[in-house]
Length: 269
Image (cartoon, rainbow, N blue to C red; front, side, top):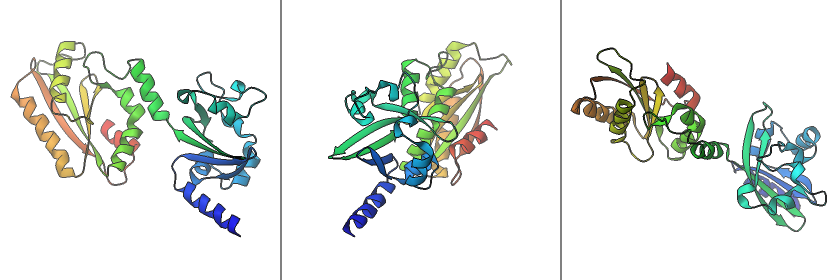
């Protein structure tokens, strides 16, 4: 009776965690949490075991990640993981929709029990790779690239939720009064980006959205405060001209319960 209560309590605790958690006893899975079930689209441990077989088969055999081929025949997968430097304890696993996700692995062994915790680091890994490859910054303007923002957009949304704020954006369309194109005028684009960034805060992002547009993304607690950024941009655009450039500003504020994908679609529209 006490053992059943302890198991129920453990299940309740792990179900609160966002990380994927699986507990083994003598290398046999005995408990998975809600996040684990959601990731693999199963309703129970029994369904998972019948459909997925050996746990190590979940690891995508990619040279950049830990997988079955990197395990010596005399070792278990979790013993092999523990032997690795912490930075290399990363696996790739597929969702049922064949979407690859990257996870860091935490292992805790208690006698015959092994608690494995998988933390989704996909966004962090993409961000690190793009920074290392210098593909996060637009060369001509010095603003962030659109592709970089799209890769980390979900992390930005998560930050908004965590801080109980909403996302807001100002689409800044720029054009020359004489009708010529700004796309190849690097000095003008860099001057514009510098001017716009002069009023931003640490967590704001200025993005080169297209040839003739920037997007300023920032977090606010009210729609009224979102308007303040628009007023600041309007003020600096009038303070001094840059080679006869004209500006047009459009404010987009995230609606209640609006996903980041839907928000970006409205920006595009």
